[in-house]
Length: 343
Ligand code: CP
Image (cartoon, rainbow, N blue to C red; front, side):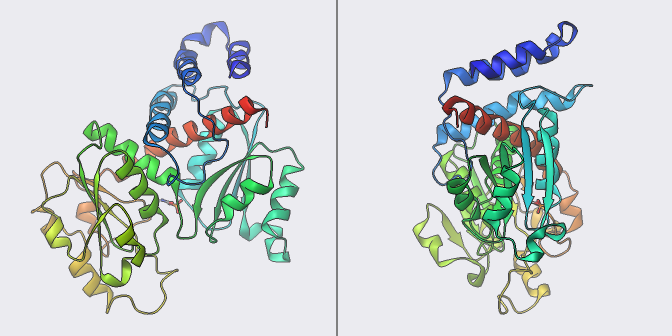
């Protein structure tokens, strides 16, 4: 930690000192809390205190994006690799921008343009990148457990950007950040997560983050899209959006993951939309201050009508904006943990 503070002090020019005050405040606050994880694999094992700490750290980083010079030095000299084996618009660009704002160098890896097509394994890919001197790997992979596997086999910090159906921790962190920003706290809030729960890593990470922070979560969808494990989780289950819509403070609509669906989990798109779509008509029965969320990308007209996606209760783009501060916080914290342990 002291090393990072030294680096910031050394690289903070006299005239720009005020701009760095907030970054310094974040770092001093970090001194009082023992953040010890050099990897962020999932939220299942994080305590409420750790989750809140990431959110508090993100809050400090939020203002960097509002400056005319959108840079802070904590990751200067560090290299962040975006190792994406699946497509992404929001997560990949958000991590790239977050790393740049913290002054890191970045490498963009995508499956399509890599030696993956020549049969190179995930571990060989990571080790070859590591041989170039990287510090943080941000990985998205279709195989659940890929980030955990890497974290046990390479020296760099590993951050999960979505693995199979398992977890998408930074999406859930930006979701709870947005709720906390707009509602003050998650304690006692009623939250519905609606749709394709079975194939959703977002739902799993959301569920852990939201319940740990005190919210009451209800999973809503057709029985074919609610996983059997739901009965063992700290959540309610409902098969009727109409039963739930009037009661909740927040509704998070999930994308139907057509690329992962096996069989026919519902008779037709029209029928799914009729029973589980967030329509303008259904919204008339919702609380007037309900927050409408979606991790993106949206299948407009299926999960949600455009009138709702772009309506006054929608916070979907605010989620994306907040993702930047949250990812800056995560990169900053894992790097800090690695520096503390000398790993
Ligand atoms: N929410 C989310 O993970 O979006 P991307 O697939 O575009 O990263």
